[in-house]
Length: 214
Image (cartoon, rainbow, N blue to C red; front, side, top):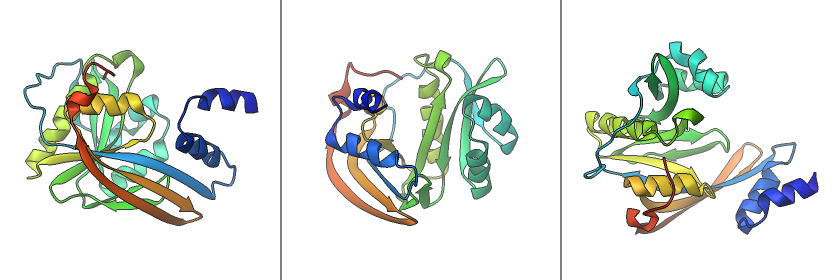
């Protein structure tokens, strides 16, 4: 068992190794995480094409969402809290989703970490695409609609967090036009949460050109 774990973390940064080890503790009393903070204002000259159509999700879609990810409790709680869900459909089947909040605060339930959403943004989170629809533009369609939702509310940006170590997602977001504006380190001890926010110089989307996919 230890050997298998060592293989999975081989080559990872010390932070990722420590995070993975602590988060495996059975008590869940102590958890830690790190996120990249990104935002985007527009898609520039990108012409978005993809498989599927995008619409607003409702609580009635929960059974179909659970066919993608078995998270009925989380989905139910999100709708009850007023969060929104965009769903991607193809031939009558829900093949992807992207959640967002229009409020001025959001909480990452993994760490009991509540944070403010900039007044010019909506916050997008938890995007999932069915494996057979990845690399077919469905994620791009969801991102385009998310920006349209922001504009309709009088906001100019979309903000999101990406887990540290999720290199493929980070590169895809940067290629799309997102800008890296900082990092957050979060530590949860019992029911208490401690965080440190670091604002950093923007990283241009060109830094990820030619790498990653969505």
